[in-house]
Amino acid sequence: MPKTILDLSMSLDGFTAGPSISIEVPMGEGGEKLHEWLFNGKTDIDKKILDELVNESGSVILGRRTYDVGIGDPWGGVSPFRVPAFVVSHSKPKKMVDGFSFINDGIESALNQAKSTAGNKNVWIMGGATLAGQYIKAKLIDELHIHLVTILLGAGSRLFEGTGPSIIELEKIKSIESTGVTHIQFRMIK
Amino acid sequence: MPKTILDLSMSLDGFTAGPSISIEVPMGEGGEKLHEWLFNGKTDIDKKILDELVNESGSVILGRRTYDVGIGDPWGGVSPFRVPAFVVSHSKPKKMVDGFSFINDGIESALNQAKSTAGNKNVWIMGGATLAGQYIKAKLIDELHIHLVTILLGAGSRLFEGTGPSIIELEKIKSIESTGVTHIQFRMIK
Image (cartoon, rainbow over all chains, first blue to last red):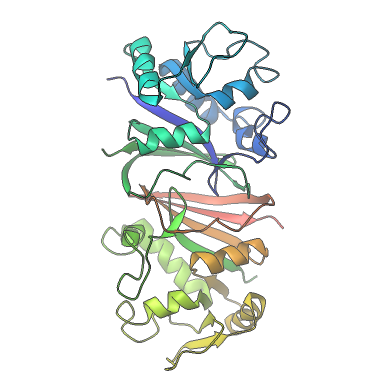
């Protein structure tokens, strides 16, 4: 059965991006350290985990700021995803890019459209932190995949900032060790 | 060489206790879920990790609130530690309890006294979150042992609240899987 998976890299102190995110510094100051396991430091284990995520996803959901800071230099003006991506946004950008749809009627609508597009594959919610937190709080996620990065970032975008105050029970599916990162997958108990 | 080890149970969303800590609710609302691996749900792996911590510690440091909420029902009026414990506190309690010293001239002084007492064993800093954060920010810790508990607590005392804004590099020593908890040990790079 297809699942809705929130997949994020997070520092031990809970940040999914550094402070002062901008077009020039798309991951925030120091935020690139959260993604070294995806680039420079990639191990076979990391590669397998990333491949599984990508291959099993039939659509992607992201926030508007993630789109705005990603679409330029990081993605070179084209979608980095092999599948359709839905951007939760109040407005459309001036220039549309193939592969992206802009959804302005809320996170639940975006998820419904993403599920419909994904068919029997999963929906991959990639963040940023604010959008991810909204999905967690609304209990619209089936699985939470955290790539826990061996660093204290000290500041930035905190994933679990507005997800309380209620307790949300989780079940650990698996935990996989790698260099500088621990990949932990949880099922949300609803 | 003896080490200064900060050892805490933390929810995936970064809380080391639930909200509304009091004498009646010493771990805060829901906070007892962070310590199930120490009590009800203890596995052989959990037991080994706890034994190592206790056996290799020559002294303990804790905050005043942790003392105040612990000394009654949880500890039954006596020290739960086999070794001397230092309480960082502005004042002394009315009734002194054997095994506890109250240190009112700061975290560094408390650490120096704890180190002197520990001799060739480690100093174990057990929290709470505020005191732990002060030690992290002051870079007085050698190792950070986090028992990452499979739950989103949603509210409470956040370990990494005031530890920024600077980046602190870590090195992962080891990560050990258990039921409902992942024990991860880090070395602080100074």
